[in-house]
Image (tube, rainbow, N blue to C red; front, top):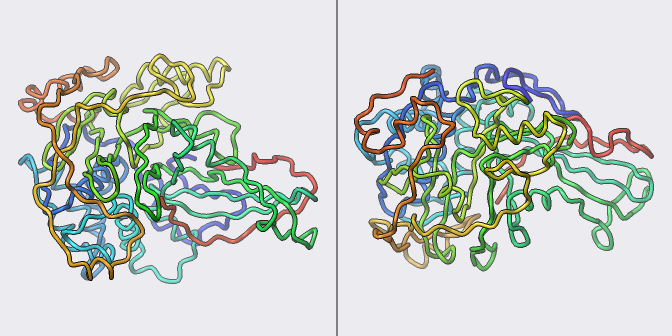
Length: 487
């Protein structure tokens, strides 16, 4: 899947219109600077602050919003989520103060999702889904009677959306039935998984359909036993992963440690598993702190354009090391496609870490690592890590109450979050030493005191799905098996 063309996956109709030229999407930061402003907590808004910060540091989205291209051509009257996000991102990254108040987003909460209310604790994943959907609606404004494939050509869906393939194979005649679904994030069950890679393996593992779940085979013309398997058929430019930490009905939280890599190869989970690694780089981690969905606090870690990681906890923005970032009870993970990393080559802009280069060199040598790699470049399935204590979350500055009748009337797809986590001001901080692979011009940011004086570095849980036409091929044998063409 390249960055300069819109890819049509096998079995899917091509779009009748291209709403945004794919070659104009810039996957790498167009300017380098330190992290921007923090966000004031304006009454149980840590969920909102964390999601906004993760979106602000999504490179292809930020590049577009910083260009102000949308507002120059927007003809939408009234509420436009893209205009609001454009103003917000520019304010955060260009504002001289240490923190801003995100009132522009809070004022339109009910326009983003009619059930959202200021002062109520909300689920960060749910808010992310509704915010991205609101941006998509803004991009589709003024475009009517569009086919499903054309709707997927907005800049929002070209960045965040991918396509899942569901393949059902009749165990009697071996006939294959494929259907396709658009997704904006991948929800992973972590009950039996100790790592993201293990959860992804479970996600694509075939499921047996028998007994009451038998499949009606068109060729056999009867109910038969079958196998069903999901794979990623078209990979997104930005991969969002939701670790399902909250029980749907009880709200109980799964607080186990789930390891996640800084670099993720998505190739083993595609419909087409043959080929070079499809490498993604972690750039944001959203964390929920607390014992259950009924009490806790949200904060996040984001990678700024200068290559350094920052912990963003409402108004506080502090440099952190990658070791700290990878030891969190993550709820949402954000990865960006790194197509600039070629086998035997270094990244064209900022060089890759040594262990990422080792990962790629193994491919060039013919030794295929199937999962993530540790800092020494060795393949691994699971690496046990402990949740760090140096980043204990702080409590929200204020909270609002709602009557029981109001709470009973409200509908939600995610659990409520109370922003009441304790803070630990005495917790020691991690080392802020910059990794050796960063360019020399970026190393100065490893010292927060120097960063304050330095000038800006110049530029050098639920899966949202759309309807797709089912494609069926009843053949005794299918040449590619599971490996039909993809991204």
